[in-house]
Image 1 (tube, rainbow, N blue to C red):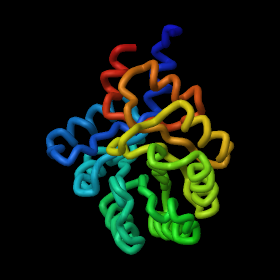
Image 2: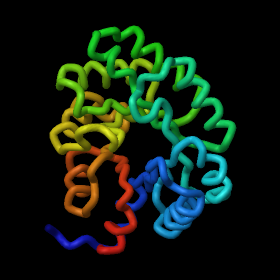
Image 3: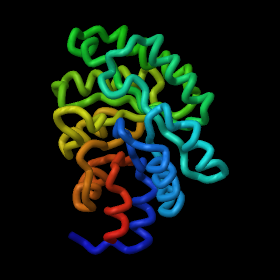
Length: 222
């Protein structure tokens, strides 16, 4: 692997959503997450909805965004619940929303439902929305169609995984998502990215955002 310069490390850091979504995460851990994000200039912190208000307060006045999850991690909530989660998150200071699509609707080929759900969250958010496909559960055809539907619904990113499924991001999936959306949307790779080599592989495959809970360990080793 080529040696990474400090400037390149700083550029990589700006692609990272510094993530802590474990259900047992404490307020103190979230405060540390925010301090680390400020120190390393990560793109955002990604936290569960109950921590949004505190994270947004901790990051106020900085360039680090507060990101939260909607319909997480299963995606099986109703559209109304996802919209309510989104509105509350926005009111609490979230700047980005990562929503999990209804995978059962995808499996049924109910694309009108999927599009309506994504569009409803996008409209409620009025900000960056990343659509989590949970690619480990989908066929390539389903991934491609979901990307097109997400694009039509006005979402800004497609994202590989929650990190709670049976598999995380793969180079092949990131390449497929990027080939499908072109430059019209962002691609976020998440799930199982724990070292620099994997992070670089995802970026080279086409990811322009990386979700990882190992960001500090990765960046500190450069």
